[in-house]
Image (cartoon, rainbow, N blue to C red; front, side, top):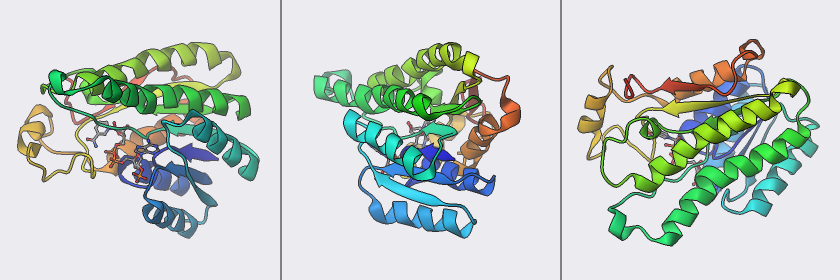
Length: 239
Ligand SMILES: NC(=O)c1ccc[n+]([C@@H]2O[C@H](COP(=O)([O-])OP(=O)(O)OC[C@H]3O[C@@H](n4cnc5c(N)ncnc54)[C@H](OP(=O)(O)O)[C@@H]3O)[C@@H](O)[C@H]2O)c1
C-alpha cells in the first residue's frame, strides 16, 4: 500500500497511477484540488486497486501526520511513501522574504521528514521511502532559484541520513531528481520552455510518467539493495 503526497496533479498523480498499475493500493494527499484528487482516485479504482484521497496541507505538521496515520489505519498497512508535494517559490533574492523561506522549507523539507517519521512507525521491514527532489539541486541554471534549490538540496542529506538509519529494517530511502517535466508547475509550452529544453541532453521535456517510472523501480521489492541513492530522471539536464 502506497501513500503519495501531492497526488492530485502532475508528477504525483502519475506516480499514484503507476504504483496502482504495478499492483499497489494507493492513497494520496492534496492541498486544495479536491476534484482533481477524486479523478485520480477514480482512475486508481478503475485499475482495480483501492484508493483514498486525504486533504492535508504539507505545511501543517499535525495534518500531515494525521493523514499518514489515517491511511495506515484504513488500509491496515503502509509499505511505500512518496514525498512528492512541493512548492516552487522563485524570484530575485531581494524580493524573497523570510515567509517565503519558511514556507519553502516547511513544504519541501520539513514535510518529507515529518511524513517519513510517521510512516516509519507504520512500516514493517522492507518498506520504501522515495523523495522527489529536483534537477535544480545539481545544476541551478537560472537566477531566482535560491530557495527552491536550497530546499531540494536538503533532501539529499535527508535521504542519506534516513537511508542509513532505516537500513537495518530493510527500509530503503531514495531520491528522484526530475528534470523539466510537463506539469502545471512547469508547462512544456511555458515562456522559458525552449531555453529549458536546451539544457537537457535529449532536447525535450519529460512526461510525468517518465518520472513515475523511476519511482516505480525504487518501489519494487527487487530494488532492495539501493538506498540513500539519487536517480536523475532528467533527460540529461545535470550532465
Ligand atoms: N515539473 C517539473 O519540471 C519538476 C522538476 C523537478 C522537480 N519537480 C518536483 O516534483 C514534485 C511535483 O511537481 P509538479 O510539477 O507535479 O507540481 P504541480 O503540478 O504544481 O503539482 C503539485 C502537487 O502537489 C500538491 N501540493 C502543493 N502544495 C501542497 C501542500 N502544501 N500540501 C499538500 N499538497 C500540496 C498539489 O495539490 P493541489 O492539486 O491540491 O494543489 C499537487 O497535487 C515537486 O516536489 C517538484 O518540486 C518538478
